[in-house]
Image (cartoon, helix red, strand yellow):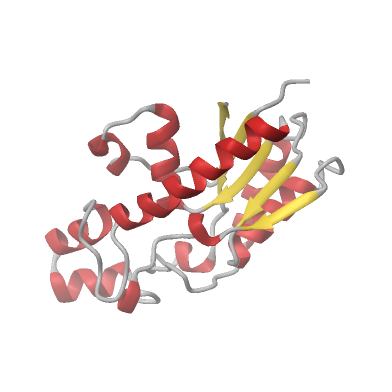
Length: 190
């Protein structure tokens, strides 16, 4: 059995995702479609071996992981780590993209959603997210190598960007153009 792998996936669709709202650190449950997506990821990972699993405090991360771990009785340890939580959208959290677009225009919406170093008021930029995700990755790699384990990570769309940049050796521009699926996973060998 192969060891020292990371299985990275995005939480499945939440109600805020479906409504095209800036979700950030607000808790939003999985939609019925999201539950189906989580089950699809679970089936894709069914034949992998998972020793340790990570999630954030948000239910969409925990519930997606819960679906995956139904096939993994060998996973004895679940760890909550908010360094890989979604980007905080600050005062925009709960606001729809449509309302923001109407009030500020398409250019500003694009800047807020896809700029590397622009943070919404009282929120985070992707640069800030990358800093905390990279600290998590550094610690995770040591743990994997020391313990010879496979790890599952139930992450968020914006926190996956720095993961993928790191492991896929992407440029900043490539990272900022990523769209992360709700119903698939990425595997990285350490």
